[in-house]
Image (cartoon, rainbow, N blue to C red; front, side):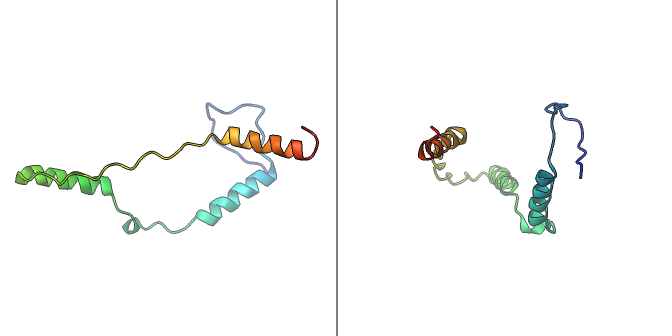
Length: 95
């Protein structure tokens, strides 16, 4: 099985994709694939913008928005994986 893709600026001539990777990617896509129903989604930005425009047109101030949620802690996944790897190596006596 081979996988043909469009040229990409990130593409390297030495890049290879195994059959197992292609199969796994296809399985993932198939698992997430489904019918698209636009009615299932709302455009909250558009709704808020329309409310703002209507409010300004009517001369009525909008209610204040609630305080934005605090940003979540960002985890460095590479560092976390490196730590797990070191722990596994130490546990097996290879570290």
